[in-house]
Amino acid sequence: MTTNVRRALLADSAETAEVFLASRATMTYLPNLHTEDETRSFIAHVVRDLETFVAVRNDRIVGFAALREDWLEHLYVHPSRFNTQTGTKLFAEMRFQRPVGFQFWVFQQNAGARRFYERHGCALARLTDGSLNEERQPDALYVWPATRIPSE
Image (cartoon, rainbow, N blue to C red; front, side):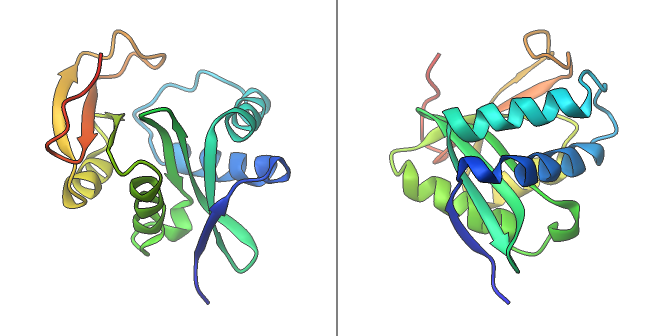
């Protein structure tokens, strides 16, 4: 059994949304701002409108990542696949897709994600109070590679 990464299809939207919902449920510090149906609709737009890739194991989507220009907009792994190299495979695909580099936001409280990204050659570029994100939670701007200067 191996996990493969491939470009997402529109038909993957529902299963991708389930990964997002399960992963976000582990982030108990975040407010619950949307219904599950609203979230499923949002993820359908992500799959349709962004460069989205899914990690597939045993014919099931177990993670996904999405790019918009030089921004990594999403990288989520189903909790059952935490610490199994699924995130590493998705992140490697993002580096392949954007060899010049990219930037992304992470919630400051998401210590596991921050360690993951730092282990994979990302650098912290800025901390904010979260006033500009929907959740109003302090966040951190990271860049890959570590030498990349973030764009405004």
